[in-house]
Image (cartoon, rainbow, N blue to C red):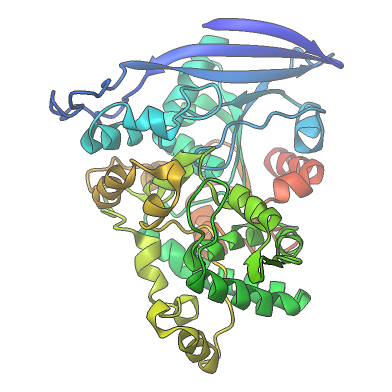
Length: 456
């Protein structure tokens, strides 16, 4: 293990790098020798994983807590100044922020790095090694390097909570305490069940948004209608389509998302050379929100994090389930304005989508070019390892607590509540005071409540 140490305003920062196997579960063992193709570089045997540890002065003897970030495909937060939940956690722990594999300094997987391994079959095998089960094994390697057999505490936000749940299933001996915020997944249901809850929740959040900002619905209809008729290019060069414009609704899952979307939609149109066009400033801001350039793993693994051998392939779950909700239907582009009128006559308001990935994004987003075939293989893949053991969770002995939000747009309350009942001894903290980003907006009180729930 390599290590570097720094000082930061009353804290010591330790940075660690460890070498770990790429493939813990045999994802690449059946890969043929020619799968990389002539120009492919092939799959590495090992990768490096990075973590940064914060130690508050006077707390050098505190136990460690490892933090797993949301995602998939997002690195650990870079927090300067040290505030919110991290500052509170540092009153109780030495906090280890791990860059989950494929992110940050842990073998980051940009699109070019994925396509460089070779043909789609090789890309598929590579990507299958970057789910929560592999992240748990990385954490266990890091824990052993830092403190031998001594267990540590874990905190997971969103997808990080999926990872902590997987940790409780696969390596509970490594945990002294487990804390989860907005991230209790179903242990056994297909991804379809997730989206059958998230589409209605997203529709409800749309209604709340337009109730707060009524004029924005007509603005949204106008932009979508304009994009169907006119070519408007994002700064990355591709055409902005009506379907992709609707994906700006991802932000509605966060506490101040409606306000952020309102600010984005204000004054989006201008007259340019006698034509009504979308302002360059609007296109630039929309492009920043829509591009997957900084986190392609989020796109390719969004549905794979729900897949297990017992549930089978996801088969583009969000795309299929969308058809069950007429309010999310797109107007027929060949029908012109009549398509929109038909939707509105049926009583359907404008609907932005949320945390949903679709196969056409791999054609429309230049940041995902080259991953279309690999993403198709992932969507059809059936031979996934199991992520969660309901039997192990039913006999859990690790003190655990989880925040569950009634209005979570991404992780359905109903499924989280079911899983909370499956994990022996887990104490659920249920509230409608927060949205999915509650750890960020209410961090200090959330940490203290988790600690009290576990240590009461």
